[in-house]
Every structure is written in structure tokens, then in C-alpha cells.
Length: 163
Image (cartoon, rainbow, N blue to C red; front, side, top):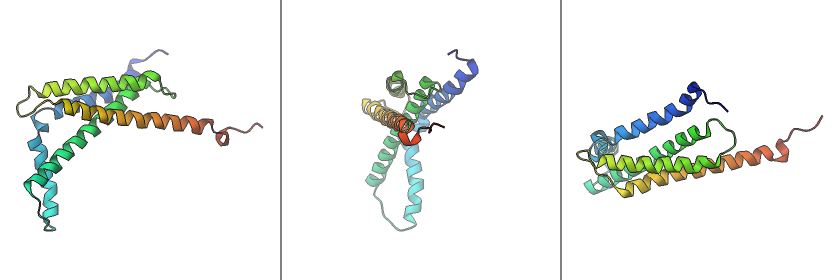
């Protein structure tokens, strides 16, 4: 099948945009201090209910939210990479899961390396593992989705009856 440039961009552009967003979050704007401000803003609603929270609790909430963000952003990256590799194919290609996972692990590694050179940021192997977990989780769920859809398609109840 010959790939047209417009069709290739249709599959590639969202992947590039998402990678750019991840990269921009790796700058000082994505630092722990900035996300902590968001946590403090959200906590202001809780304080109206007179619930007291310690700094350690707030710091833990910040850490959890940051790690959930890692998992989520790389789950989305994995699905966008899979979408590009699939290129509209209805049957799951064997290369899709592996290729998407490799893209995510390599990009997470490059992203963490980049963070080592950004003031106020650090690169951590632990974050690459967290990112990889998010990617793998999304890819496993996507694989399950394709299996379920294949079973549904081939189920006798969904077969057309002969006329």
C-alpha cells in the first residue's frame, strides 16, 4: 500500500505534537515547584471544609500526581505511536506493540537525559520505568481491545445469515 504524504501526516502529526508537549513539560515549567502550586490551588477548596493538611501530606499528593502524570502521558504516547505504526490497519500488526513500546522507552530515556541539563530538574531512571509502565499498560489494554473485537467479529451471532 502506497503511503500518501497527507495520510502519513494524519497519523504522524498527533504523535509529534504529543512528543513536543512532553518535551516542553520537561523544562522548568514542569518542575515540582510548579506542580506544587497546582496542588496548593486544589487544596484551597479542601481548606474551605476546614480539613487540615500537613506539608508532608501535600508533598506526597504532589509526588503522586506527578507520577500519575508520567504514566498518563506515556500511555497516550504509546497509543499515538501505535496509531502511527498501524497506519489505519484493522488487524493488529505484530510490530505495533513492540515498536510503540520501544519508541516510548527511548523517548522517556531521552526526556530524562534532557532533564539533567535543565536547572531545577533531575533525570531519574525510576521515571523511565514509570513512563514505560504507563506505555506498557496502554499497549496491553489496546492488545486486549483488538482481541475482544476479533472475537466479536468472528462470533457466530455476528455472522451474516445466508439468504
